[in-house]
Image 1: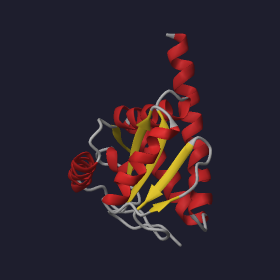
Image 2: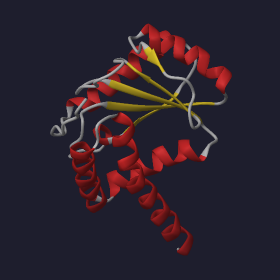
Image 3: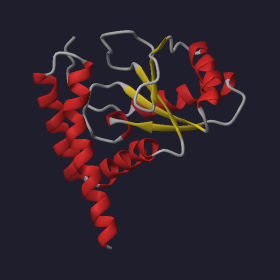
Length: 170
C-alpha cells in the first residue's frame, strides 16, 4: 500500500458534515464529534482521508456508537489499542474520500491532543507547511499505515510538547 498526497478540497468539509448528519440520524444520543486530520485544515494537502474523532464517556458507551457507525457504512473495527478504537469504511488501502474514525474517551490526554493538534494546524500556517513536508517524506519512506503513522507521530508529539511549554511560560 502506497499513499499519495492529494490537494486539499473544500468538499471534505461538506463530506464531514454529511457524515455527522447521517450518524446523528441513526444514533439518537448526542455525540461529541470533531473533524480532525489534514482534511479539517483548509489548504493542508494530505491523503484525502477524512479523520473523525468521536469522544465517549466510557468504553460501554462506545458499543452503541460502533453499532451506529456500522449502520452508515463504517464496516471495519480494530480492537482497542493505546486508548483508541479505530474504525474505517475500508479494511486496507484507504483512498481519498474514505473515513477513519478514532473513538476515544473524552477525559483523556489523547482526546485533548487530537483537538489541540488540529487547532494548532489551523492557527499556525508554518507548522501546517512543516507537517505537510513530514507527511510527504513519510509517504515516500513508509511501506504501510503503521510506519506512516509513527513517522508522523514524532512530529506531532514535538509540536504538542512545544505548544505545552509555550503555554506554561505565558
